[in-house]
Image (cartoon, rainbow, N blue to C red; front, side, top):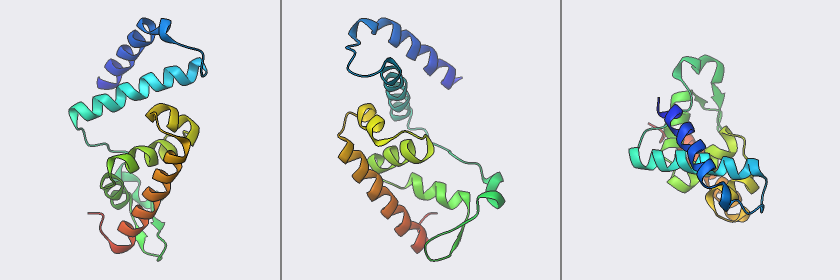
Length: 136
């Protein structure tokens, strides 16, 4: 229901703000930015816990960390949730949602270099947390 509401509100925002579109990017990127910003604002207001993967897929997604320690989806999700907000948003947009750093920079109104460094720091922090077992 929340997703439907967000989508409807996003369409209303797009229509009501169409006159502000300045043709500095593609219309698709502009629309994506509005939708993503609405979703981020909603999550900030509600402080909802984001669940990205289900534990029912543990057997398929079991992986080996740098030190060959078996991990499950729950451990990885917990580690991602423990990342600082900036790291987590960039990591999630890049790794899970498939945005490139240019798109992330536009969405979050930061430079491409900032997006890349936040992603790099997020990966490093995740490796540290997962290798030391600090994900629960």
